Every structure is written in structure tokens, then in C-alpha cells.
Image (cartoon, rainbow, N blue to C red):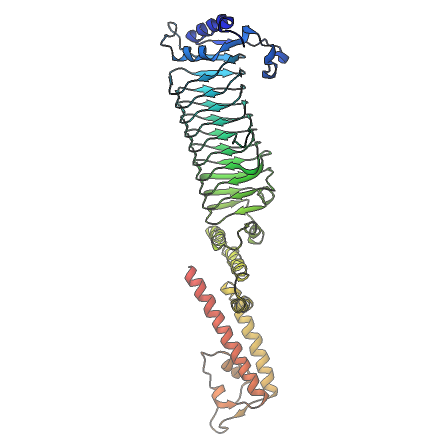
Length: 465
């Protein structure tokens, strides 16, 4: 390791640049020499001790006259651990394309703005970090960023960052983080998973082109997440591992497009999302949807196709997802599509019933479609009336009182014995014997079954309404 005296000249340059608000660029501008992987060839002329940076930021030295102090360092190798715990820094800190020998500790730091763009760092910790402006980690390379409870007054940038976790640690651990602006993770590579449990994002949350990998756990863990605008997972977004958005609140759209999540299980239970947008092929094969609420699904699909989405729930039959989908169709004025959904709900529910209830379910389905196909009742009524009238036209019953009773009418007689609530006088005026009596009883039974099914269906619809 270089001695402190070896880097004294560079540290003096940094101090002067800091007071003037200027940039100290230590790069050689030879591409093969400026990459962090070439750090072994960086001599004392590019080395700065972490203590020197901390002392400079925490020193009461005032900037040069007419200047605003800024720490802007590019292309340096930072020797030792940079710790700014419990500190307050009144100047912007920009450390670009640097290599850190040891981890960074920003826990309880209060800073104006922080940028570590393009730097390679063993790990970054920042428990309860406070940043008034932007937190910039674009193209950073590290094993983990742990900023539990951080508060960012601007935006949080992670575009192109490479986070490679180890020992089962999450590469981005940011539960309860609050970002007043957006959180941008375009092209982020996170091997070990992202944890933003309970986070609040004041604008958009963008994972476009990101690759999140954690085969044995959560690729994205975000229960209770709040996003004030859209959450986008597009342009090649790839997740390997579980996605947990349970109880999330997304005021805009959740957009999943051109994504690879086919072997993923996504938990959306209890989430409240204004709009869900994405082709069916973009959504995971397994979706937990109970208590998910939304205003619209885009693109619009007929119910027969959208129901396939509900069948991806591994938890089996749950009534709420069907009710939610039906409500969405009704808001669009598509009542017929809503009825298709509610009919599918009853058919799915029937699979879990005991045999007697299941048989009764089949009867209701065949007769009136559980109340959502009421015209079927008229079709069955017409068929039974025709069949009954034809039979009794060929085998007329005997008149009880041939002198006083009404003349036999096959169609009226069929209606009289088929509809239990009507009294058309035909049944009382005529009596059947033998096979005719059995036919009468059978038709009356069908009539009661049809009437009971109609009443059950109407009751179901009125209760739901």
C-alpha cells in the first residue's frame, strides 16, 4: 500500500480543486489504463487516501473567493476506508470512475448531493442516509448497496450499475427508502436481488432493460411499495426469482413489455394499481392476484382471453379477482363481458364443491347459466312445453267433468303442469293415468327445478348488485 506521503501532492491538488469548485481529473486518457480493472498500474500520482477526502469534506476551510466548493474527483484510486458516518457535508460530492480499495460507509450522513458514477467499490452502506439532491450510482460496480431508510430529495440513479451480491446478501438493500423524484434503473444488473420493501418513489420507477437475478429468493422484493407515477419493466427486463409487489400502491401504470419473466412467480396480492399494461406473453406464468385492485387492463382483451390471466394464480379459486375483472368491464360499459367473467367464476367455484352441490351447480349452469344467461330458461321452457304438448296431444288425459270443464288444450295443459305458480284450469279439469301420470309428475319436477334455478340465479344477481 502506498504511504500517505506518496500521495501528498495529489491530495494538495484535490484540496485546491475543491476550494475552486474545479474538477481534478487523474485519468491518463488511455482507455486501457483508465478502466478500474487496470488499477494495479495506477501509481502514486493517481492515489488518494480516504482520510484525506474525509478531512477535506469535514474541514471548515472556506472556498476561494467567488467560488462554490465542490469535490469532483475522476480516475483516482482511493486507499483505505472512506467513512463519513454521522457527518454533514454542505458541498456536492462527485467521485467518478474511481477505484476504492475498501468499502464506503455513508450511514447517517447528511449530504447535498452524492455521485459515485462509474466507480468500483467493494460495498456501499448508508443506513439512514440523507441526500438533499440526487444520489447518483450510474454504472457503479459493487457487491452491494445497503441504504436502509435513506431519504433522497432528488432522484436516485442506478442506470447501468453492476451489483454482484455474495454470501446470499441482496445487492440492493433499500427498504423504507424515500425518493422525492424518480428511481431509474435502466440496464441495472443485480445478482442477488433488489429489496425496496416499503419504499416511496415520488415519480416513476423504471427497471427498463434491467436484469434481476436471485433464483433461490426474491429478484424484486417490494411489498408496500408506493410509486406516485408509473412503474416500468420494459425493453428486455429480465427477472429470475420471485417478484413481490403485494400491497403496493402505484398511482400510474404498471407496464410490463418486451420482458422475460416466464419462469417467475409474481405476487400482486392486495396491490392497488391504476392500470396494468402488457401483453399476455409478457406476464409471469404464475400470478398471485387476490385483493389486487385496478381501474383498467391494457391492451383491451375480451373476457375469454383475459380469463386466462386469472388462471395463472397458483392459489386456486378466489372470488375477488373475478369480481375485480367484472367490475373493470362494467366501468367500460361492457356488461356482456362482465357476465362472462362472473359465469366463469361460478364454474371455477363449482370445482371445489361437494358432489351434491356440484350437481346442483351443473343444473343451474345448464338451465340459466347461474343467472347470467337468463334466456336459457325460456329456451328450456319452450322445449318442455313442445315435448309435453306433443305427448299429450297423442295421449290426451281424461276430463274430470266433461260437461262443465274447459276443453283440453295440449299447449295450455303443458304450461299449467310445467309452471308451478300458474293455474290455467287445465290441470284441475283433466286427469291422467298410467304412463301419462308419470309423464305429468316428471314435467312438474322439471318445472320446479327450473323455477328454483331461476330464483337462485336472480337472488345471486340481486345480492351481488
